[in-house]
Length: 135
Image (tube, rainbow, N blue to C red; front, side, top):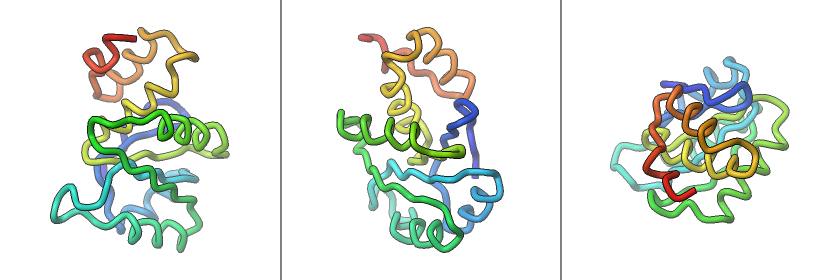
């Protein structure tokens, strides 16, 4: 499991495993958000199995799967709501963490400058310069 901190309230991660869920809770997270559709790769765990483990250990789980090129306004709005309502840090995961970082960036368009968004993402290891070029 590779957690990449975006800010004090949010980290992103490549695909997590069921065995990572308790570690995520122990790291202080309250919510896990899945941005990855089932079936992208044969060996990825099903989101429902991760959700079951999250609920078992007392974490909130939100399933917002996003096809790589389709960060819809609805997903961005729902993600923004999850981030604003969470009482403790949130972990978003997908295949590599890039999709999650892009969705976070879209939630910040009217809150942070483009430069701040790009800098924050880059510090976490994600170059969003091409993604945000039209903003």
